[in-house]
Image 1: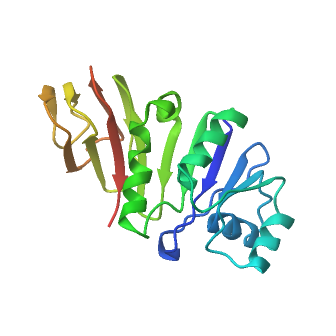
Image 2: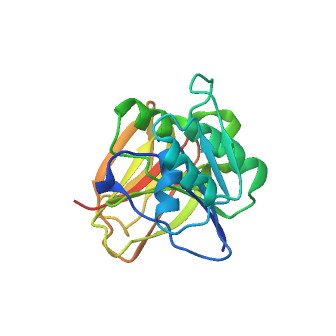
Length: 215
């Protein structure tokens, strides 16, 4: 399985998780995230952003360690995170798109990143997106039935209804179960736990964010 790793530019180094270095994978660095990759020995397939948070010397480091660099004006319609996904869809055909460096900074930046999945233009890649930081793994699911596996280092799991949900079912693999429950509004069903190594969940309509986390 090949993956595209996108390093965003969160200023909080405590939440930085570095992607694995794999020959078959691809790497996008976004603004200061590109500098972080370059300084840690990654050769970046694409660096992009307005680069308004780095110096000229740091920009040179990015350029020396990138196959391609695309610069944008600070005043633009799309955020740097949105642009990274636009280019991911156009130029990288991978099974997973894993995002890092998305948390720990401004709250409005965090909200805009998490709400990306609500945009119709990104619907085709929603289920390929994985958000990772030091304490959380976040994935998104469209209607269907799924077998989920517990991450060994994570204690909690949460089901976040990004939209109204119909017939949400959580089986006995989870501490708190549901049986065809309907929710007419977005809802956060947090602090559940696996009681087995895996559990199955299903729903008929809506969009679910599934989070595994630890303190």
